[in-house]
Image (cartoon, rainbow, N blue to C red; front, side):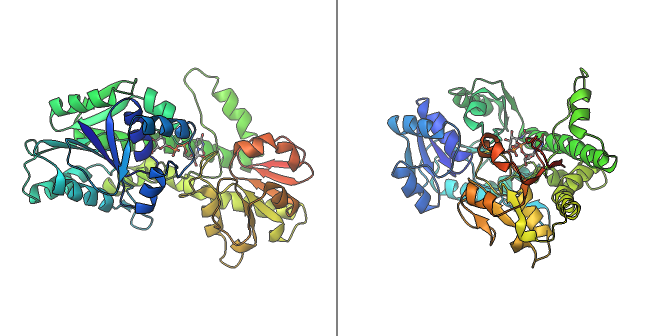
Length: 407
Ligand code: SAJ
């Protein structure tokens, strides 16, 4: 049998390649014909450790790409779930569209596996009624499964193989069948449960991380107020056998951790209190960095914002994803007429986000006096000595040169 993987982005593509390279027949479908053409030409569209090699393996095993959905027994949907900043709700439109398209071609008894993260309850509220409205009987004509992805950008292929997974299914037997499929490449534990638990667990995992990062960020603010070294305190406290504190930083970005906790806040107002506080603390960090920039400028008698350079525009190190990134949030926080003054540079970002964006590290450095390290890409770690002589605001705690300020 063949798996039709729908959505060939950050999650769908690696997953499709993983199945294919382990001998499963895969057809990858995406509505974006440019993307499909590029893949057919043997090129991949984003950077991820090991992805090119895996792509070659999958091609050798016969993976195919198409804009069409095919008739088969298993569909895996890994489309984006965009999120509205103002209402804090996700929009399941792409998942709904994919399920609609599957229903046009699928045979009786097909299984639809949703890998996209959805807010808890989405499958009951939107997907189930949609399928039933089309005259399908769930459990007979179509089986629904939720198998949320859990892989971390930057180490996706390793985590695809070794992480445990959750599979939520209406019918245990169907869940077990899908588990077998994932076992073709996944060596972690695979837990079969129901759909509600799978939806909730995924969001809980990301919320846990958000809260823990918020704690580190709050400590950074407390220590700043009292001139203490937050990193030393975190290091020593974490030597306690039951304490393990994460690292403070310029904020929490990405499409997952900064988004998923809002689902719980939205659905459980009055109950999700720590969760809401954590979100607010993490969202306040770009503004905190901006305050630090202004204070450091004052201390050094700097008045010219065009001499300030933000290093790093992505949401974290060594990825090319800028969604919800702290640097973009910082630029948005600034008064409209001031933001373009700041110089920016990121080795992973080729398109222009800011008016004064550089595409060459040395030229960028040459034109600024204060360098703000927002992202600890390998590039800057390897070239940290080039920052000598600059004033540095190091939000990632990676630089020990003279004139370095911390968060
Ligand atoms: N960050 C800190 N301090 C830390 C760790 C992270 O400030 O100590 C920041 C990062 O710089 C970044 C943000 O948090 O801006 C999130 O980065 P991340 O590396 O923690 O996580 P993501 O968003 O890349 O991936 C997460 C992962 N979830 C968990 O670790 C619980 C991943 O396993 C999920 O698959 C992914 O979300 C997802 O798609 O949901």
